[in-house]
Length: 283
Image (cartoon, rainbow, N blue to C red; front, top):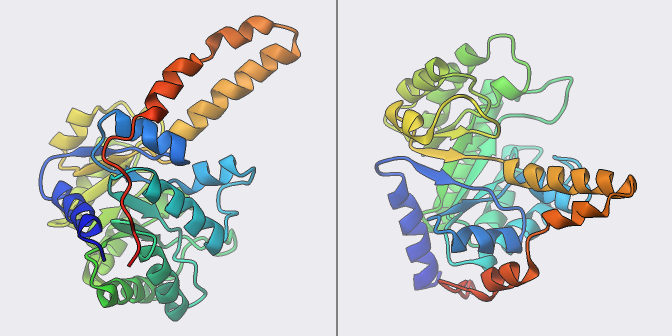
């Protein structure tokens, strides 16, 4: 591991020690460089944004394609990157450990493993199985001696669980014991549920997903004890909304739709800027 890569990972871990920070989600090298230029301290990948950029639905990227997408983001800037690593890309804990080892090798500073199966017939892994998978990820990271941060995700709110908050709180405790260092419960609908998750996770930092307005500001989330805020595929979806709106106008014969474009010179200015250069990740 290079000194620069170790520093990137140490900086990411330090961000979780206090305060509340925004962790935006680029979907390709260009969006990553733009966000770096805007001064963010770290980035996270987005499975949905990466899939849409490749003409696929969220969840359709396999392990190799996901690792390629993560590597593209990692190498685009000198910022720490947290990988959205789905359910760990393994049919069993041993396969999860192998996939996680490959993910660490991309140069990420953190990675998340969720408990959603992707199978509508059984949306969540049973708790014991989820814990075994997370422990396998923990052991795999520890074996690399890299200090990569492990995020445990409870997907109860996004998978239609009949009592998502109670089940999330039950899983949080188990994931903390399994070696998760950050807790992430996407889909929390209000301040009360966020506060309950923060209490249950203590002392671990909590990530809150805000991919649409929820009536809370960054200051509000910080006051609730949230340590980091990610936005999932929201920026990618905003970009796609702009494209689809413009195409609808063009199809109707309205060429004025092209007036919404960002000047190419402005984009060239951003992409000519490199800031902290992407590091050599060779081992």
